[in-house]
Length: 267
Image (cartoon, rainbow, N blue to C red; front, side):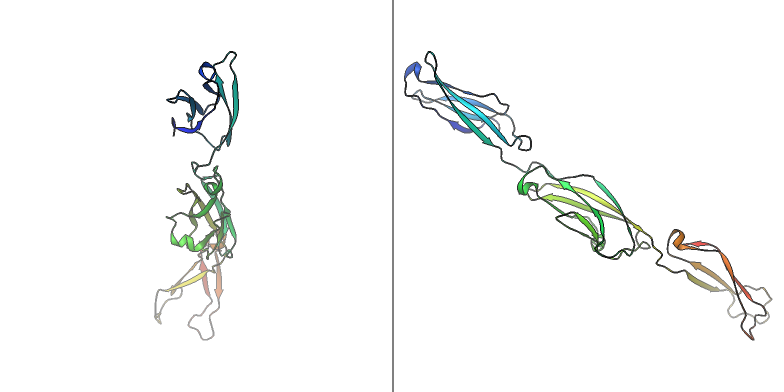
């Protein structure tokens, strides 16, 4: 706390009167000043008073010189070195090297595959600067089932089954927390794009127009509609247009081959 004495400094001088200890001086510095006090018996002492905030991250230690002076002519003096160690307090929160990470992973990627590595730093020392990574509290349970996070290294890995057809983009919210008594926390997110693979075969759907088909149906009558779909994306889900001629079976009611056609369809 500013203005409070942090240490009492006392020198002794066996002389009396003007030749005795008269004052103290402190070497120039931006943080401490001296408050010289006089006791009832006339002896003097000094208190080292904090005047400006200390920051361990800027300066871990200070070296001061205290001088005690008597009033003789010429005055005599004594000097003492004051070494001050600045102790750490948890005044810095962790900081991520970026707020948003981006990664892409193929669907059906095996469990344990590395997706991304997040990284944060903390300027404090000891437990105040030790970082633990974890999922943020508002990360959905589904995301926690799909991904695993190493609390020490910040490595995000595949844990569950990724399916492009189910979810194309996952937003994973993570945090870094130090081990201070009142921990500092930082947040980031990882955008994981799921890349499609050709894991779905085309599906043919037949819709009957006439069922049953009248015996006097004219040639060329449409008796069924066929559609082809594929759940995959882009080229993996594109069904090439074309026609296939299916021969009528022996003794069939169809007197000629049947032409089955489809248009290009993208899943």
